[in-house]
Amino acid sequence: MRTVFITGASSGIGAACAKVLAKEGNYRLLLCARREDRLAQLKEELQQSVEVEVHTFVLDVRNKEEVFTAIDTLPQEWKNIDVLINNAGLSQGLDPIQDGDTDDWDRMIDTNVKGLLYVTKAVTPLLKQSSNAHIINLGSIAGKEVYPNGNVYCATKHAVDALNKGMRIDLLPFGIKVTAINPGMVETEFSEVRFHGDKERAKSVYNGLIPLSGEDIAETIAFVLSRPEHVNINDLLIMPTAQANGTIVNRK
Ligand SMILES: NC(=O)C1=CN([C@@H]2O[C@H](COP(=O)(O)OP(=O)(O)OC[C@H]3O[C@@H](n4cnc5c(N)ncnc54)[C@H](OP(=O)(O)O)[C@@H]3O)[C@@H](O)[C@H]2O)C=CC1
Ligand SMILES: CC(=O)[C@H](N)C(=O)O
Image (cartoon, rainbow, N blue to C red; front, top):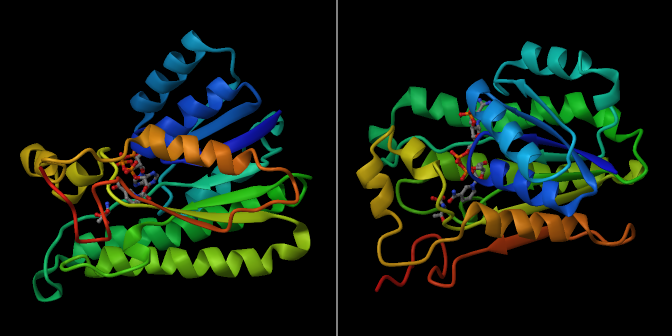
């Protein structure tokens, strides 16, 4: 039984990872996000469908002190973390740099880069105790190329790309695997958050094409985690068939 810690489990890719891994039958799930009600709902849903151990807690990954205290004060039986899925993240705004909102920039940098760093630093001592440790970082096509108006979000995901490579080097002596999962368009709450709650604009992002689902990404992560101990998948770029790169999509 491996214990998986998923950040940002209240929605989208994180929630889908919880559901897919719960069904696998060989994972215990440690789940966090800011929305407590969503986590409680997910826990109930998971435990109604399969037999799985789940522990949830509220965490804002931007809050350094909160991150270190939350990990430090986990119940003893939840401290044996084998897998960390650094999934919590967001995009806010889609504007040219000269028109960007500095509060949006702060939220993206604080969550996608600093939050990921705090969680990784807090959890690494626990991962070092595992004989089968793995960190999965949610990057993006936005970490491989820059698209118009993506400026700061793309910068944060380029940072995740660099951190993913850096972690793999630094954690090599401890046998901790490090993998980047870089999706293209996945229909989750991502666009709704990017457009500050504008549901119509968010929906239009996926008009005329079949985007990836959170489950598509979760199944890929389950595959990555299921490789034999001597095999690590370093980096994956996953797109809907209708998307060629960060900007070119085929809409019907
Ligand atoms: N959807 C897409 O097209 C793509 C997404 N990604 C990446 O995938 C990851 C998941 O996004 P996705 O599932 O699509 O989007 P969602 O908006 O559906 O989910 C984001 C999750 O992150 C959590 N989160 C956001 N901010 C914080 C915070 N400060 N502290 C703790 N948790 C936080 C949210 O929970 P809560 O609000 O409850 O805190 C939520 O559970 C992100 O890193 C995103 O950048 C990458 C490429 C493409
Ligand atoms: C362009 C993408 O595929 C990605 N979802 C993003 O908006 O960065």
